[in-house]
Length: 155
Figure (tube, rainbow, N blue to C red):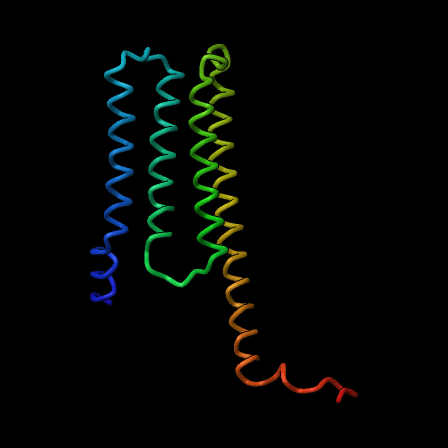
């Protein structure tokens, strides 16, 4: 158990992922405080939702980098979902001016993006597990020669 944890912690991919996201978080924080952004409640919500989405994406990306045999469906589905999630959050933050009179709508939009992301990740994880198990059963049947037997009434 300790050996496996050590391998996971010392993986280059994990350290690269963490450092990239930490740089992204630092750039977001520096940009918010150093660029003279108006400190209104709506901008604070936008800043908080950006940080939250970056942290959630960090943990989701680390699960991709951890050496496991999850299959192509899991890796492609989760990485695509992370990109779509981040793009949606960034686009919504760029249009915060449209929500100046309806800040509750902006908060609801951000909560909706997060909920959709969590639902999509849950579906992807569940479906990838089903696909992986189905492929393993098929491979086992092939190895046992079950598919080589003629069908009933066949030659």
